[in-house]
Image (cartoon, rainbow, N blue to C red; front, side):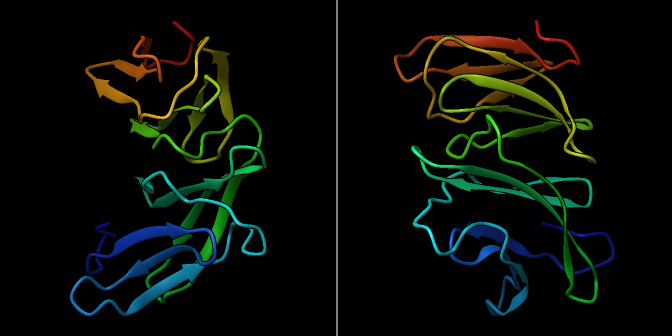
Amino acid sequence: YQPTGRPAEIIFTNWQHGITAVEPRTGKVKWEISCFEPQKQERAIASPIVAGDLVIGTCGFVTAQKHFVAVRPTADGKVEEVWRLEKAVAYMPTPIVHGDRIYSCSELGVFSCIEAKTGKVIWQDRLNNEFSASPVLAGNVVYCTANDGEVFAVEASDAFK
């Protein structure tokens, strides 16, 4: 993560620690926010993503609640939670940022278009399959490969196509 006017940071997620940034050369923690549920045994599988000045991480468990959380770190090492989604969100596939939107496909095939700044769900629709792989963006199309190999192509737009 390369914040504007600050040194680069390596970002990672962990169910016990939340979202953490470290200095690449030393491993020193620059900032950290506990935003998942450390008392439960969850999994932080997907890679964190960056949308503008927000760092977004996911965590959860297949049979329990999932967390899709956006935080904003500041130059003084502070970090604030900006928004959170916990309904019909993915915790295994890494979401994709395209422009000011986030596109995400959950393990059960709930595909979401989310406004990056606010976390507002623009739309959600279902792809009739199960997913573990992260979606891929090519041009203006998000490709989601289901566990059985079927590929779904969804337009990266403010309407489900």
